[in-house]
Image (cartoon, rainbow, N blue to C red; front, side, top):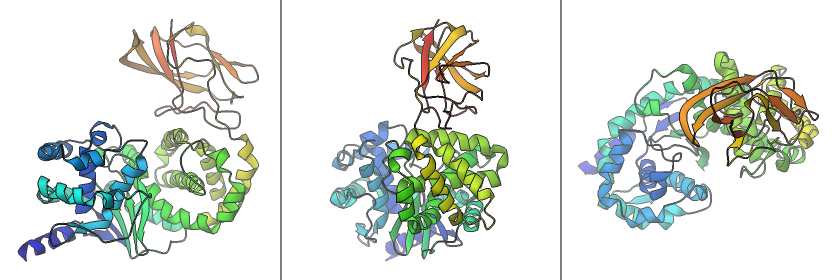
Length: 457
């Protein structure tokens, strides 16, 4: 009985931080799922999906060394291509908890993406828990988990986020439970899910600084990282509005034009565009000093994910919202969709046509020539981030050049410019993080992010 009472207290202690119906937690089953994925071959080698921040990550690897060859780890060894299996396992295991016999049991009839990886592997998972003594590891780290829970709300501006969303959108039908489930091992693939009719859970990643207890991180960095919870919470506001306008969205927002292999079906594409546009509104109002730069960086990121006109879409949302007296975001849906229909045939992503992206090409640095697949915006300067190479190996030196005197020709499809650098061999990258002057088409669409040239004298 004492053991059962202890575990009940442990679960309560990790689910105690709540305000205005928001609860932040690290659940025993969710952390189990993340540890299992971290121990798989894919989890150990992938750079993004599992966050490897010391000392916690090292403690995980060392503690579970005796079970590193457990058959469960082969069964759940997913890949980037099998992201639905990976993310499905990670989120679906949240629907389980431990019973009085220390075995996992389902609490919710919840499935995230279709694959039933937790149910399929349940016997192996329970065997892993027993042979690894997982529950002792979790107990030993309760203090650490609670420090993450305590600091999360402040670090990610949770109060500001909720106040802003409540202001611009009618509060959704608030579930009895709204939970932010966190783990120090989650590196990417955030998601927002309704566990049942009464429970909504967001599964964001958390920053390295929060994991290490560094609450003095630069404000600008914290604003960048706020997106991980903002854009998930935002879906809880935006998606219900979009559902009411679903027919209008389908009629006026052609996924084939706006979506370049993002994997988002139906109105989910529109919702993703809208969610990030609202994020831009949030940082513009709350952190104006950093807003333009941060918005642009995430627009690069979203364009690389397949949302190729995010910058254009966000600009239009901002324009319409500035004229929206009542500020309810639902009021701009009709004019926004009217505009979307009018411009959708102009949404094409410009590409560099004349550069070899696998081999270094000899070039006169005073006359670098780029040719594009369509007419570009010739009215603005652009920047190129240059990385030095020697014998095709990166040296660590880099520079940023602003090209303000490029000579445009061929109806804006060709530009010639001088690259004044002492580098003899370089990679020049356009439209990516740290560059505040992107290359755009005449229609305002970004050059494909991370487009680069490889040249040598």
